[in-house]
Image 1 (cartoon, rainbow, N blue to C red):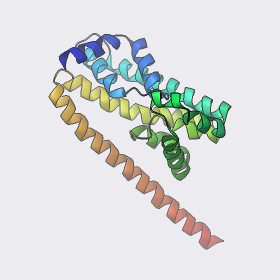
Image 2 (tube, helix red, strand yellow):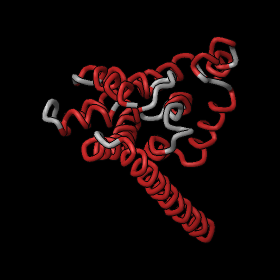
Image 3 (spheres, one colour):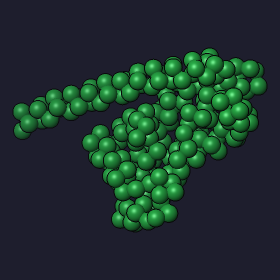
Length: 208
């Protein structure tokens, strides 16, 4: 475990390395943010990096990766993207039709807000940018919501790495606990949004 942790620290010992790895994580290439931000934040704890810049460049990388997915979907279109993810080579990136369909269903259910909420949901995080591109979501809103969602997630990981990075057991424990809290917050936001929509529809129906 110590060897792996030291290897990861070697990858994230500069801000551009953090940006590149988070861009990869946020695109269609499977690469977990959990192995990028906590080691970088631990370096910040040691005084080698600035934890606020770790968060900033982490968000920047997340945006760049999300932009890749957004513009691919925007330029290629839904039929071609679905055709591509059914190719054999897509398995290398752990892509398949069902994963894209799940992200699209999530987007259609919660609209533009899903690009914020989806950044906090592990099964949706990377691919939520694709349906945003399919429907040509306003790029300004897409950027804002993606940055906010990614910022929350990256801040959680940075806090864990900063305070518990040297203690792998504590890091695992608190990561699991805080992840559950984050998921709970997401579902609470979803519940609020659904309740608001329900009352809005009832009000609209009554007026009509």
